[in-house]
Image 1 (tube, rainbow, N blue to C red):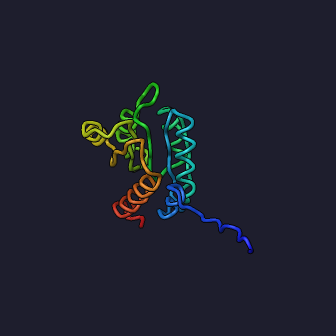
Image 2 (image 1 turned 60 degrees about the vertical axis):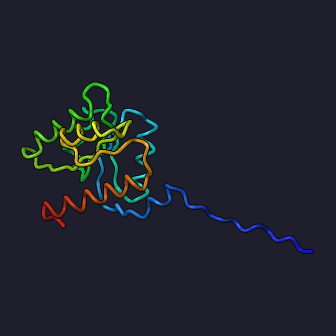
Image 3 (image 1 turned 90 degrees about the vertical axis):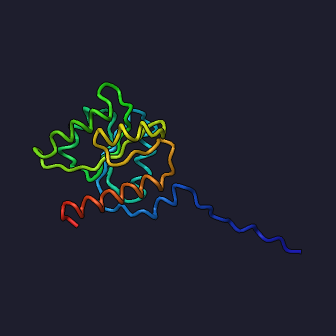
Length: 155
């Protein structure tokens, strides 16, 4: 009797599924104080083809904004010092002066309706709970950039 070697079956993971959202050429500014989360989200977005600049604070994000010129901002709202809400309000206040129009995604620890409303009032376009499927973040970024291109006339 001849024993056959079991075939390897490659299982799709959530991270592999993020490749479905094509982010090639899209620049994302990612802001999160947690190094592990920053690293994980950066990997998710880069696997989809995005260029990512990741920073740990609102101050670093504002400094990176002008030189990196992101297509989308993804930020945790719970940042040390100036929080993500204040960061987006600051960006919205100066974006016409510096010629920047950046759609923004708020990442929060919870998914309560109050958190969503607060994020939208602050100037975010989308609110996502931090516990999310990687494909969801990639799809949101892809959608925001396609919508922004249509509004700006770049697309």
